[in-house]
Length: 217
Image (cartoon, rainbow, N blue to C red; front, side):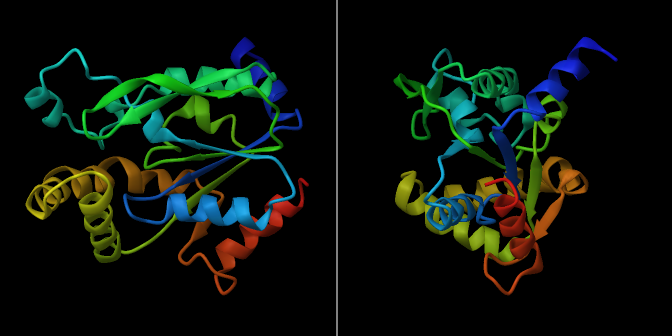
């Protein structure tokens, strides 16, 4: 047995459970995580957004930053996330970067995590992409929502919270967001333990996830 495999088995066997939540942009990943935090408010749950681990582009001029494909795996610092998750599993404090979507840079401040959590939710479009991170997960979830719904949600979100024009949002969606979804995100569906179509008690996948969490608390 390799050293890495032994380490991953040790991390999986401790009492801190990590659940990966993925799906296309606008699928409802953040909403699902908030729903779980509210539903299980009697346990310690940490939410980690993969977006926090975007590479810092402050070394580039603004025009070059805006050309970056933020839906491509190369835009994310998976190594940093993996190491941070390992530290959390070992009860070692971490500093989660705070990403500024408007400037495409990491802010000078950070979110300090220095307490133990029973459950960690890692959510993002590529949270199941990296094999090392996948191997640390207790459970993985894919939210399977139609392209039309995801696009409309993306437009509504970016208009309000990311200071974008509808023209720039729709252009980015058609040129990078949806193509990258087909190429990199949708294929990770095969790694998911649970598939959710609707975040409600009428959805079999959602009920399965709730039962899965209940089994560890």
